[in-house]
Each structure stands twice: as C-alpha cells, then as structure tokens.
Image (cartoon, rainbow, N blue to C red; front, side):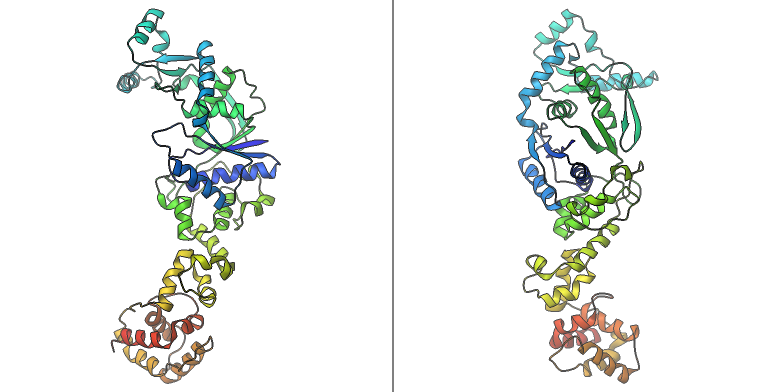
Length: 445
C-alpha cells in the first residue's frame, strides 16, 4: 500500500487539504503502508518556495510525517517530456494552435446548436500540409490528449461505483505551449512511476480520475490494482463550498489563533463519519480509523465544534507546555484560572490584560450605590481564593443581594465582561488596587 499527498505550493495549507493529507496518512499507517509527500509545482507563475516550506511545517505541526519526499514535479520535467514524446509517437498527443478567444467562440457556437461545449478536435483533423504550415508559422503548439471512446469506471472506496463518459469531456491539454506539463498529466506519470496504490483525494477530482486512467492505459500501465477514494468536499454552515480563499481557515491562521493540533486533527479525522470527534494527535487516532466510515454527503465544517474540542485540549494543558505562548509575565496561577474559559489560546492575552493591565469597565451608574458598598467592604490584602467568597458574604449582608444580582455588576466592573473564569481565582490576580480603581470608575466616583 502506498498513498500520496500532493498539494500545490501556491498558498498556505487550508483545512480542506489538511483533511485529505490526514486521511491519507491515517489510511497508510493503519494499513502498514507508506506515505509520499509530493509538491505539484509545475505552475511556476504561482508556486513559491516559501509556500512549499510552509506546507511542510504545517504538516509536521499537525503531527504528520512522510516516508518519502517531498518530491518536486519541477525536478522531473525531463521525465514528463520523455513520456509526452511516447504519447506523440503513439498518436495520442496532438498539437493545437487555437487561441482562448477561438475556443470560447467554438464553445458558444456548440451551445447555440444544443451541443455539449467540448473541443471539436479540429486540430486533430488537420492535414499534414496544414499542420506543417502551422508549425512553420513559429507559433508553438500546445498538446491535447486524444481520449478513448466509451467510459472509464471504477469501484470507489467512498462513493461506490463511479464512471466517467470520456466522449462528454474535451480532450485535455497535457502540455502547454512552453513545454511544461499540466497537473492531469504530471500527476498520472508520478503515480505510475512511484507505485502509488491508493489515491485518496477530493470528489472534485472524479473526472480527473477518468482521464488519468485513460492516460495510464495509453502508457501501457496495469491499473487493475489501483484503488481510488474520493471524499466529498467540505461545506460551510450554509452548505456552500468551503472557500480556500478564507485565510482564517488556513492551518497557519488557525495555529496563530491558538488552535491546537490535537483539536484540529481530532476534528478532521472524524468529519464526514458518524463517529464523535475526540481530540488527539494523528498517531492517537489510528485505532478508530476506517475509510469505510466516511459518507457520500458533503460534511459541514463547523468552527464551533472545532473550538469545543480545542477548549477540551486547552483545559488539560499544563502551564509548562504553553508558557512560551502566553503574554510575558503570565504565571501558572493565571493559566490555571483562565484555561477552562478559552476557546483559543490567543484569548489568554485578553484575560492577562484583565488581571495585569489597565481596562476601562463600562459605566454602571444605575449600580453606583451597590458598587460603592462593594468598595467599602473590599477586604484588605493579602488575597487568596477564599477572598471572593468572604467578600460576597459581607456584601450580601450589607445589601441583601446574592447570586447573579450580586456577582453580575461586580464581574462587569472588575473584568469588563459578562462571563469568564471563576472570580475566586481571578480576584487575587487582579489585586486590591486594580479592583478598587475599577469599582470607582464603574460607579462614577
């Protein structure tokens, strides 16, 4: 068993691609196979070395490793050229000269006649003399692959039986006019050369699979043992495709916000299955992994579910594991006080400002008499976690308030927030001087 993950280094890794990488890794590791990392970087205009480095870094952060790679397609151009020549010699790769404008006009004409807007193979019908004149014009051709008649079918490991009717597809361009290969071609050659046995990718590649199987057959490859699994693409809460342009859903952005790899891996590994997501690094998720558990419907990516998992992870993290990512000066007592109320690690900065900074509480003029009573009964220091309870008892006796009627205005005045960590833990961190100053501000004293 051999699988591959093959991103294009044209941007940061998005959660959709990360899910494909994770499922490939889990499938390979659970089955005793190997995992190949390949960078599909033949698009030289958009591929960047910094994105390639970021992909590797993000995959490692998520807890993934690979047995071979990263293989770079840009380093295999001579191999693709060699295979292209073989296809030309076999009459399966033919030159074309139509411009984008000419192709668009042809598509429009076919649609007007009620025909499918597929390429009409006009270049394939050129006589030898016409082709010679075109070659002599100096305009380099691009090269299309002549698809077979009929259909290509396979038993998909996720979607069940799938078939692609090749006559309904335009002969794909495999080689650009500058000689560089396109994804459909280079990917098929790589999968053949590196012995990939299982191709697990998004459902948007179903048509590509039909075309690539036809290319492999033209190369004389035995595809009987090749297996495919196409996973339905993620959608957002409205059921719309999850856009890769949403930078906030890149692994880099999620990591910067304080999403943990345990939460993200645990969520993505079960997304699309009926199983409940549990946080864990990929190696901890192997025991429950089964590709057959993934359904045929597009799964909804719900950021709230991810954050709920992240909160579970953060609640259990010891101070030593997060100390270097907390605000300067943050203590273990602070971490223990706030970690149960964080969805994201980045939220700790706001609570550090509450306990150690200078916040301006909202004006609570309607609560001014009560806040003045709170100020008058504020206990002397030193404070500990018993201080809040003792203060509340004294204040309740003086004002007759208790429960929410007592604590809501106090929390608003002292933290600026309606909800948050236990005040018994926060109060000693805030300290008497800050508490008194904030009570005066809120009361308008």
